[in-house]
Length: 400
Image (cartoon, rainbow, N blue to C red):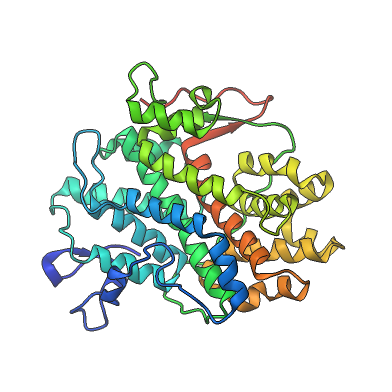
């Protein structure tokens, strides 16, 4: 939704920030919820679900740490750090509105409402409009993001570090929306809708391949000779070869966000929680296929270990489900697809097919966490770099 000017505190507001009367933010108590990740989803009557959530407490703890890093109460602004708390929460609200998950919209609207808005200068308005448009596009249709879109962010004053932080915020809230919707569905809670956007259309299958793919950044990497101690430390903790990996060296522009992203990614990726590695990879692959992330899809294809199934999914998800005899794979594909395309419509009925086939609450939670995680990872990979095959020419040099 476009930002609207209202007289309330003389600030810029998204439509869902105000009540019908326009005199108070939507559900202002939502700003004070203690758990700013699960947004008050606490203990449930179902003991199996409670046990599943407790077993995965490290995931939610790591996710909450990401909340704190991406949405601090104060930011020391400078030439290289221009994303204010207002910018960050405004972006979060834009992404939340795109998902249509009411609890998320209420939370970020209530947190944004008391903050001072940017000045009303032409430059400030152009900047806010540009980052809002970018956030909406990346949240709804990642394949719309290209090098030109990144250049436009640079043109309105965002530094390389800003762009990395900004992309992390969009990816994180996309992930958060799907976890909140998924856990609510597991708990049997009805869906509360707010006006959202149409469900995500599946990306074209033309760019998907079983061949090994490489990833090339669109922005300059952290220079190891001038990197700060925190940047070098998080690189060493990210991956054994992270200092040579363009992906990690680009994300290290925001070392704190990368550290917390690693915590979430590594914790969800752990095995031993009831869902086989193959099925987790299948969930990640379906999400990546819908979002158009050929790099992530190719990474998961080997773990699925069924080349014909993978190729069929690359071509058409619905037709593949119709021809597949494996009922569990069909159900898992559908759950991952529904959560990816329309989190605001994800209900207990969407996960029931998994239970009908004998899966537990813990196994269903694994499918939800994996699909949600790749909603985040896909957006980082797709927007910040180009995916290359051996046959394709090298991409242009990173933006200055």
